[in-house]
Amino acid sequence: MRNYWQFLQQGWPLLVFGFLAVFFGNFGQSFFISWYGAAIQADLNLSASTYGAAYSFATLVSGSALMFVGGWIDKWSLRRFASTVALGLFIGCLTLAFTHNIVLLVIGFFLVRLFGQGLFPHTGITTMARSFDKNRGKALSIATMGVPVGEVILPILAVLFIAKFGWQMSWAAFALLIPVVFIPCMLFVVRRAHQLGLQVDPEIKAQSSDASVKDQPATQAVGRKQVLRDYRFWLALPVMLSGPFVVTGVFIHQGFILAQKQWSPEWFAACFIFYGVVHGLGSMGVGFLIDRFSATRLLPFKALPIVFALLLLAFANGPWVAWAMLGLLGVSIGCGGPVGAALWAEVYGTEKLGAIRSMTSSFAVWSTAVSPILFGVLIDNGMSIQALMSGVAVYVSAATLMAYMAYRVKK
Image (cartoon, rainbow, N blue to C red):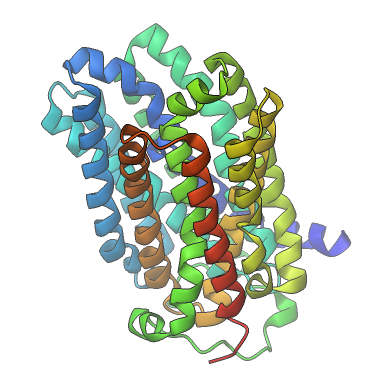
């Protein structure tokens, strides 16, 4: 605990930056945007299928763009890259604030998905993984806490702002938080990090800002081409995508699940608070395990809670299933973020980490666009909840087995 306190004292500027970057990325996450769906459809006179198609299209394009622009974090200074990302999200929020047709809606969705869901957390997590070595797990845990904190706070603010100002002006209000809160805080903590001698920019080739590991040899860094040629990467990728794939499919089609389980929307919404809390606890707790055992050893275990959650959803009944299912999903998602971010740094080095993470993040974004469509087609064709969730559980189990075999051999 004394060492952990020293780590917080020495690295607090970058830790604050990582948390803020991940937190502001919530403005582009599905759980936040979903609160605007009904108001947008009513105001723009859009059917559910048209609205869903616009959202999926913007998500797919943003995921593709992320693969190309995310690597710039390996070449630009952190201040320049973070300012660019903040400007992009600011423009995206304002675009939604002044949307009056489907074209502007798609553009707004594209911008908030690219800069919010994609580049903001990419900036925070890549900085944590690149700047810390010995305490990488704890740094990633602190940064990724921005998601569960947002899951608890932002839906309440969204509901209040929509009720008081309307959905468009609420986006304008959230847009103002970027120049008023994020940019001044970002400039301050990055400047303070430079003053403390912390590794901030990619031009600094040291592997770590921790004094205890400065003399350790740097990990051999590789780029995207080498990663794509590594068969171990393809064995690990399915389990890395399982979390966003399953959670997005379950959340988007929660209406089908509520009807099958006879749960009220109010009950399921109350259980989301538990999901957010467990998500946060998982993010914090796994950091110590990463620093103790390494992400490569933890990788095969990250999706096991998802398997149990899907089996409960398929075969168990009763109101308690909602709590148990969301709790298990929260544990897996909370642990999965830090494990995934630390994994690429451990195996492939940190010199081109931004390019590697942007590529894997693109895969994850694509998976979140595929699962709602796939689940919807299967549901429309009469598949039962037992068959659907059991089939997905088989996929996650197979992905877990592949992950177990992935990095057991050095290459």
